[in-house]
Length: 453
Image (tube, rainbow, N blue to C red; front, side, top):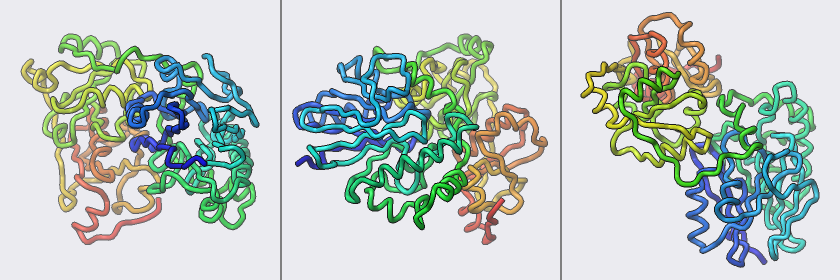
């Protein structure tokens, strides 16, 4: 009997996803939904002394580039994927009911369209016994993945397909482990703070989309009623996965660039991306730079706010990890990043002008507030009178805002600093950033938050 301990989750906290490494018991491994950034997957494989024999994708991911093709190139792994995905590279094309012999274990394919049209779930079997099911973006912990990424006019159609797909999965035994790819923190829809894995029985009992023996119309209303915005890069990445990500011949790097070289990049429509912490950016930065502090969510905001077809010049602190910057960018298709050699030290030594952003404590808010959090965050509690504009919308809306003193806020300060940098780039110069969030403001001032829109 196979233990579920042989299934090793590999979590990307920033994107909210989980890949899986399965020890097949004979020195080989199966990976499910591996990302292009394979560092954590390879570490899990190496700890067990395994070789990757199979790389399975549940669907054409919109939020990260798949690492399956890289595993095929590096490890000769067999790529498993949906026949309906029309992938433009060699793979084992699977359909509903297909089985894959893993050498003692078996993968049984269950077609689960909804999140995407070609979506598959993989039931891992030990003989006739279900070991667990990899559900990708169909059944999630306390949710189901969004259905509006393929095309806006197919959202309802795919939501109804998602209901049917989940109904098929719920026919599995109640004690069957459920291993989703999308989880808490994913813009593909998962409730915040949720566990990463679950069981069929637990989802039957607790999933809000299924509560009260929900019929298809009820499920649809609940699912579509919870959809928020999503990063702009989602609209292009599925096609990148269909064509196949470029196979890397080594780790991605940031190529150093001189100041004259940086000017040439800017003349070609490039972006200066400052990845330093909030405090460092506030103290002094290149005036046209966009602030996206390096943290777990770096890739999300890079992909949401920056054009991948134009050059990107990184400004970083000397102690910030270039490999982390390059890998987070590469996993969503940014392969041509360069960095200003010497960073801000080189810029100021060259006589470059700097700009600043004032940081204010919760009890120092002294100007109209712009709240750049997501809609759901704003409605849950915000400062009275605050203007609300999601950060993802700010690049196209900043120039329309009145030029006046303004305090930008989010939940902690990182997104607010990104918003402040976008406002400065659009000509707003009297900008401050709240250090903290709405709860900090309420605690400091003793004033209540408002809810709703």
